[in-house]
Length: 184
Ligand code: NI
Image (cartoon, rainbow, N blue to C red):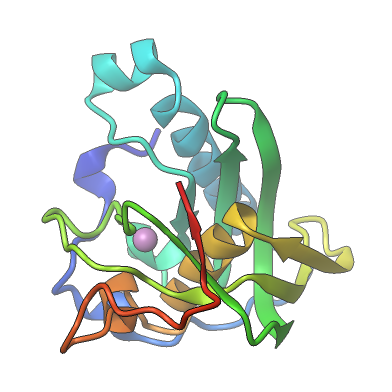
């Protein structure tokens, strides 16, 4: 199982590289990687398992974060009651369209690969259309808004070598367009 010691931290070049696209059928190695990444997220959101293995809670994990420079990311997004509202492993995902209107988390974002807290709003499109393949090679196009769109943006950023704090306004970390939706 993936543990915190397996998670690549900011400063490692793999986090700044554009991930390689995968080809189908996926090898057993990458199918297992998908399972392992999702297992980390499930375990990390279970208070008992997380405490036992000292896992930091996560809602998304991209392959470069475990040292694999390929275009795959797992998402396990709960609502504010802890019910899972979005669960998927993206392979070769791309945001093919996005709203002009932005949204962001009122508490800012964090990342399993970034150990320090970095304050500031991380504005992202409020609505996105994502094209991707499933682990089984099924091609999909989905529309997401709000929190699942934010998490998807964060993970797809990882696959393009970007980290969340790249999107924070350097002069004024809490500057926002006036119509930005802030999620609390
Ligand atoms: Ni991250």
